[in-house]
Length: 171
Image (cartoon, rainbow, N blue to C red; front, side, top):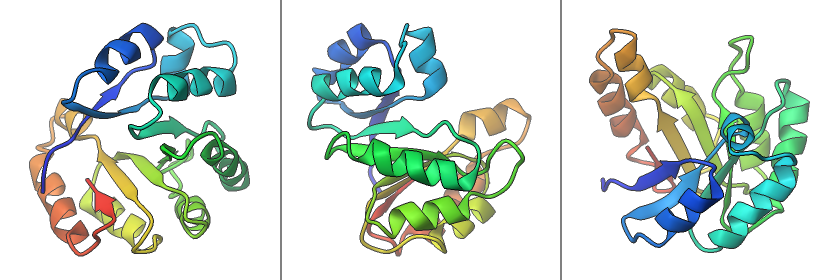
């Protein structure tokens, strides 16, 4: 399994700069980062990012918290560009697994970036919801797990092992 570097930023100037670097495979962002970067309109700002990076994968996050709204936002975000990955948190603010959202979007062949994953058990649950053809990124937050005093490496390794049979999944 190779390593891919994605920049987790929203500042347009930085995106322009890093987009020129071959080592950067793509970008991921979220509504909080966009707000900090001065975005007033999520869709317009996202489309500015997509103009800067028309070929590299760009993960744009839903910001709703209930399943149906997440699904509707994901469908809309997906229409903004061919290189869009819809970013969905693995759990909502009530700590409920977003499997319905993952399954609904992925079954429509929408590329996903499942974010804020902390365990191999979450990875297993995600894998049960997806097809084996549409691209999916599972973003494991190893750094945050480490910050809490837990060694993230065993969960990271387990997630990689169980995802190996899925050619469409990147960890």
